[in-house]
Length: 130
Image 1 (cartoon, rainbow, N blue to C red):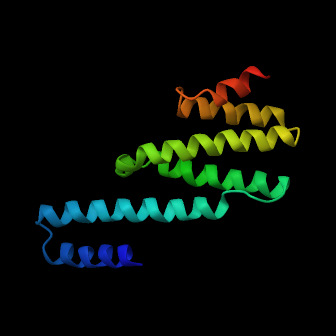
Image 2 (image 1 turned 90 degrees about the vertical axis):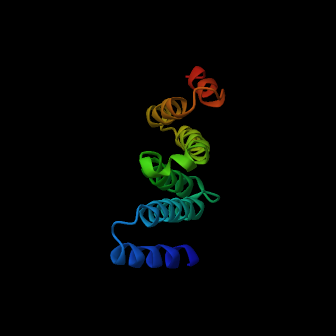
């Protein structure tokens, strides 16, 4: 709530002084922080912990939100954290799909995880099992 209030105050200042570059910079940073925090809150709400069916749905939603954050250029300061979560989400989504016998879809998730972070071995190991 505090970050939303800061964004609102900066937006008001920006309207009053549109030429002020410092306000524009602060507003951009505050908006990026707000976008990141809201997205990660959604991810945490979806991070699966229940049955196989809901796990697949939860991973699907977590991947969707994280992929949305991943492509936003204003979030470059959060890129490492987003990549870490996105890799894990794709990997775990793949595992849930594979456990449900949806191997073709699982393969796609493992491939995407590998695209996200080639330095980690888990997705490559999962792909080798196919």
